[in-house]
Each structure stands twice: as structure tokens, then as C-alpha cells.
Image (cartoon, rainbow, N blue to C red; front, side, top):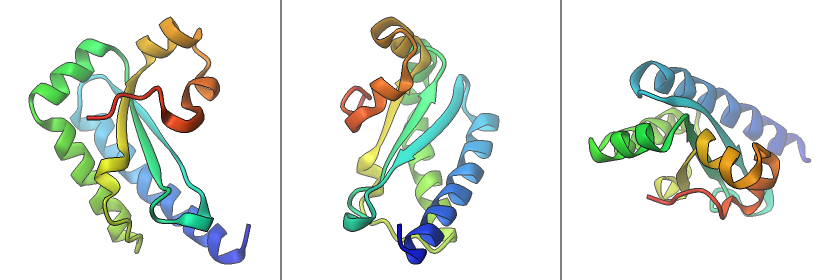
Length: 121
């Protein structure tokens, strides 16, 4: 990893930590978020997964249009740390602890590989 990649990763983590802290206070059932990035193709490769506790809480959040609010908040936090990731809202997906336990026996590493198992909204 190049020095510039390390600095970018640090800023991504700081921005997402703030976004996560805000989301924990604002969205019922929100638990955590994570990201994946390939610095060779940044920013197009930046993907973010927001994890809720249950499908019910996720569906309620999306029904109230809070999913779009959460995406906008994440985008704004990234921008505030100098991260210009055009179109990142399309690469923010939602998932649940409940689904991971049911479908992958709670193995998030396996579930997140390629982010193909998360629910795109």
C-alpha cells in the first residue's frame, strides 16, 4: 500500500466512524458499517455495507426513506474528510445480522466477500 493509499484509508475510516456514530443514534436497529476498497480503482471501487440487527428494522428504515438519508449522511461525511467518491450512494448497501446468521452462520467475512450478498436499495 502506497503512502497516499494509507492516508486515504485513514480518512475513509475516520469519515465512516463519524457516520456510524451518527447512525447509531438516528436509526432504529442500525448496528455497524464496514467498507471495501481497491485503491487501484478508487473511487469507483469504494463499497460500504450498513448493517442492521433485523430485517424488520431495515425494512422500516427503508420504508420511511431513512435509507436515502443514511446514504446522504455517509456521502457528506466522506466529503467532509476530502474524499470525493462520486456515485458512492449507489455502492452503499444494506444487510442484517439476522440474515448473516441465517444464511452464513454468522460468518461476516464469508458473507461480505464481493458484497454480493448485501441488499442493494
